[in-house]
Image 1 (tube, rainbow, N blue to C red):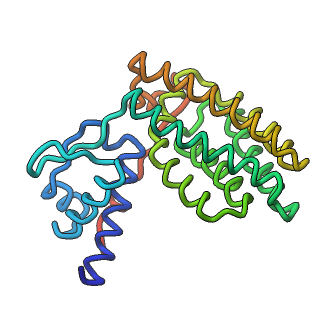
Image 2: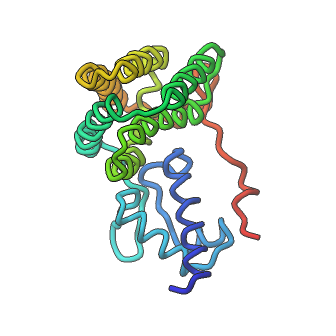
Length: 244
């Protein structure tokens, strides 16, 4: 693959993945090379390469010859992802408690929680932005563990977990998330790895239980476009998709 094709494939990969994670490309949606090529104004070769990578990572599923769909969501798939994430998160929390080196790192976690608390004070919460800060929080802890491999693997798993986060928003439990995050920070700040792991496990378990309810009840994250839900999902405009 030439450098130009690789660059375009990487670009297409980012665009397609973003739409999968934001539910703009909903679970089960058919993804056809020609349509994606026209949508993003990218030739079919890099589109094909991008789709192949997303298949290998679990975001797209092959259903037959030249038939690809956005990977479906299910309780079984969620639990497989969750079990791996929990193991990595507990390692990260323990590592961060003993690995953080600067007050700046602790302060950054506090700033993220402050941003989330500020979001919660508004009548309508941008779900995408709130979850982005949630990812910043967990990523920050992984980095503080000083284990690059752990941080890299957790990032991959978090991507697979991302769509399931939306299923928890039907219960409007973000204020609980903010308090959980504060408890985790305090344990890490005081170099208490055992307590950091305990708080992290409780936090993840609560989120898991709410997500399982959301999935089992058939909650549709596409509903998060109505102010009445308490959250909105703002998608980027299509004008930004075209290559130059």
